[in-house]
Length: 208
Image 1: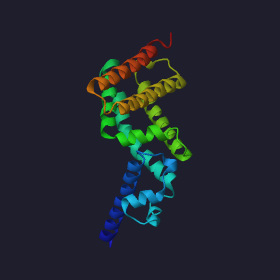
Image 2: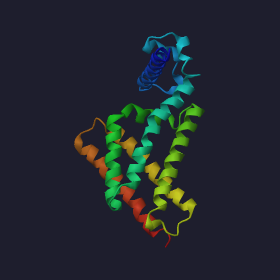
Image 3: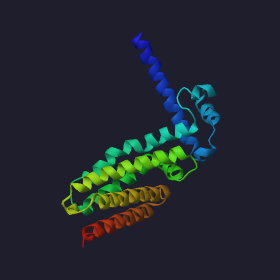
Image 4: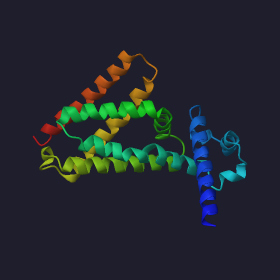
């Protein structure tokens, strides 16, 4: 019996992932607010009623896509802020990791960029929740840095949000340059590195 349940659970998870993948593909050409569940189920080849075994609505599916797109990034963010080396080395490492992520998951990055200010409130809230969590994780890492001695929690969170916002902007720039010549992608990396360095320099002199 347990073996049968395991097979059913695996099949259910497979169908759920297929719905997510189909939706992500369709969202390359439209916003979530215009996406119909029949479009998604037709793409997967299941009946529309099957959709409701996995998601309550397309908005619920959108929230799941946010979890898929951003939830897996927390280890990467922690790697960026906790990596060894001086400030410039950490910044270069961050830009390199962001560029690699955009190249590997362009559809996810495009979805977040579009829906961050899109028309589905629950999805906007899910994205903001993930970004707030990123900021908290960055703040915790910044707190351990000797340069942060004397900083208030509010100022550290403000700095963390600046870094997170810049990471998002960098991802968007890399996304726009995805099909561009190598020279253009290198220019994006240089601009992103300079902006993060500017934040870092301001940090060093903030208490003055």
